[in-house]
Image (cartoon, rainbow, N blue to C red; front, top):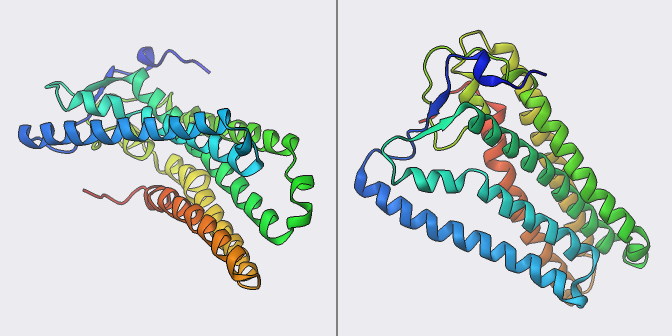
Length: 268
């Protein structure tokens, strides 16, 4: 694959208009998102360090949770610092290479998180539905294997999204209607018909996310049904854990499905 993107395209940078053109709102957004970003990074970093340093938390569930926190911290960092810096900049631009890099890390980390969320669902299923065999099934080897698998899937997913995108000719408009580079918005700027690429994107991103979300909903439904058959004390703790997991799943998959299942619809 020829990675010399700038030699293949007349467009050398993309414009990111951001969330608002108002200088007052941009200053508010700068302060607000700076606080949220720092809190997100420090919160996830604290979770990772606590799990690493506390021997009592060296269990399969917390091992997967620590890796999830690392991915969440990375997801918060692939585009947010650029967005925050742009609030104070008049020229809100990103290079072609920088734009492709954002798309790559978005799909790398998104794909990895999907697999990790499924792994955490499986962990809770085994813990609640097969408690006597939990440690035998969720051994360290399996947990490490699931984490490695999540990164492998993420890498292949990201490369599949970029395989055709990097060679698209961009010779006209270069304004991405967002605050970061996202694939549906970037390919719309290409000088060729991208309908087939859009269909491929729906099949690999949107439908995969939708199917995984449905499977996760089914798995948590099975867990909840099983929990209701247990004693009240254990049920309350298990239900609390699963509720937190399902909240994360919904917040993650909701926007993902909304964007990638209907990528040709224009939303303000």
